Amino acid sequence: MMFEDGPLIPRNRALHPIPYDPDYKTTVARSPHLPLLSMDSSTSEETGPRFGHGQIGALDNNLILNWTRGAAPAVGERIVMHGRVLDERGRGIPHTLIEIWQANAGGRYRHKKDGYLAPLDPNFGGAGRTLTDAEGRYQFLTIRPGAYPWPNRGNDWRPMHIHVSVFGHSFGQRLITQMYFEGDPLIPLCPIAATIKDRASLDQLVAPLDMAASKPLDYLSYKFDIVLRGRRQSMFENKPEGM
Amino acid sequence: MVQSLQMLPETASQTAGPYVHIGLMPSYTGNGQIFDQEIGQSPIADGAEGEIVEITGSVYDGTGWAMRDALIESWQPDAQGRFAGEDGADPHVSGFCRFAADAESGEFTLRTVKPGAVRLRDGRQQAPHISLWIVARGINIGLQTRIYFEDEQNSTDPLLARIEQRPRVDTLIAKKTGPGRYRFDIRLQGPGETVFLDI
Image (cartoon, rainbow over the protein chains, first blue to last red):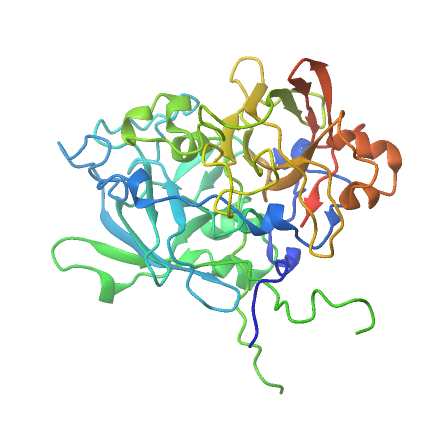
């Protein structure tokens, strides 16, 4: 019998964005220049916070209604974002917290630092959260966020995207990423998306239109699976050197 | 051709961006009405055993500017070195906290219980520490680091022992500034750059 309760599988950082990328100007002064210290994980990284259903409200994964507590729906193209949270071995991660946040249909965030011309939607907050089920599945009902310009190079625009935060079961699995939408012509122009140099890795952030999961006369659907670090098998982990 | 490993590649990180508070700390940006209960507001509840400590600091960019938009998560065991969920763990210690740099001053404060020491798989004792994960606009993948404490036995800690340039060890050690008070600054780049972890 094999137990995958060994250390976390080391990150393949070639799949991740490079920390220093002058085309995304803010990284220039915010990226460490010295090498990271690599070590096997310890209990500090292999354990992590767990959250219960008692902490999650019934409308928390419904961004169309959660800001007004069900009183009035948000403006925009209705979509369901759904998928699974898996580990690198392909197994669903049950009962883990996913949080999302996004701009409204006009490309404006409900944040004191966002002063874009597009107006706030009085019925849209732009945040949601949910726990995965026993198989690692999750879903959100929301509106498709708008693209928006941002101060970087002369004329940079963010593609439509939803920010996604995932815990897994250990603090070393912690991940924040962004989901993009199939067919968005702004993806190849975006210097933030382009911090990921591995093409296949960027493709994994682009959610396909999922007609089978859409509901006629109601919403379209996009599928977004998220893969977190797995763990090594521990069979030989605790043996003395040379055994 | 060879057999397939049937492994999935880890999903790539992307920056948390400037509006991360909307999603993770809605009340920070005045959106507290959206959820009944915000998570990670404190790592301890009233009645937590052990020494209560307050750790204050800033996250500095490579120009020496204290970032106003950094968001940090911390994870730690209770005063006996037991993580939430483990047998006998202090029910008043969740061990998880979210805190943000102040929008005016750039300072953060973490109020928690001083963690106990935890051993590695091979039995070696680690010095007491709190794990941190830092995200912000311009940080493309969350930065891992640890807070150790000036007044603990750090000289035999296996992670600190791995740091080749000995003066850099100090970047992971919170300095005592008073009873139960510590200072821990994080420098993303340049002189005194914090040791970040790949762990």
